[in-house]
Length: 498
Image: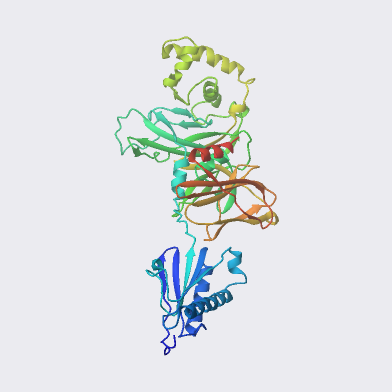
């Protein structure tokens, strides 16, 4: 063991795998005091240990063969103790103990187990510090856009004869009034059986979440009376409205609000959607007003239009969702869904059904219109020259002193999304886009009851948070996630409609 001093060798950190490292600290001959280089190596090791979750630490001490085995074992033990004492001094107090880590110490003389000789520094004047790290879970961040694509409801599709005035009734009560020859078909074959008119309705908070919609326009919160997406297609080709042509939309309004305006969707480069308005006001009408106003199509009185069509849209009269009308002569073309009415009135052809509806049913409607229930006849009515997403909204005004910011303890990153869903009125707030850290919501009314909605889509699994809260000043919210299947998520969001 009594040899001349050997040159101090630089430490070497050998990466055996992504979860284990071996750091070697060398000593001078016949001593266990740390060299300057050894102390620096241990300081670097201490920093590394604090940056990852560790599983275990092992320290193996060695000596060369120049003295007897008993002497070398004692020297190796002292070298390990020097390294461990120095390592603990570089870490916060009781760091390893707080992590439930008890270092394993082994020292050797000249005899080293054979299985260890393959990768450790037996026979050298050193200590190997082996650190096993907990395996880091590899998280695949799925695209949140892909999740919303799976959540998005399929559109309702109507077959429309483009050269006839048409009235459509959608599943949730939306009425769409299309004049004949409203679409520009110059890019398609004019000899078509029908034009596909696609429509998506969004009247509830659940509808808005599944369609990834929010109610923010001009950097202000909006309250919605309903959202629609409309599109026209012929043989797979999207067709626009003709210049100056428009469509009349009637949105059911159980609780009418004043100051409603028409908003159109604007999507930025990131895919975020906001709403813009040109100030077009949207009127609210009830059944009594309908009977007194002129027609939305000016050539006929409104009562003539309403009395002869409105009752046909009621759920107890039609087991379908469309009605085609030809104003000339008040003749009607019946889609296949009208078979139920033929059975009801015991007729075998459409011509007979026309006569019965005109002579009997229409007579009853017109004679009882003033006493009939009008709950189904309250609508927001507007016309638009645009297709795509449109929105019947109003600005939700709140005094400045009642506004605050809300933070969600969730990092804004790929595969996540968060929104505030208001429970006292129809509104969904999107987070700020000017931060790359946590989800934050600006200018939220203090005291407002909300649903905190957050979703994570990672490793092809869906995790959602949907928790009730009441907004407090400077609030920070800690989301609690639960795993959902796609169908369970849809059911949970639709449950918000009840």
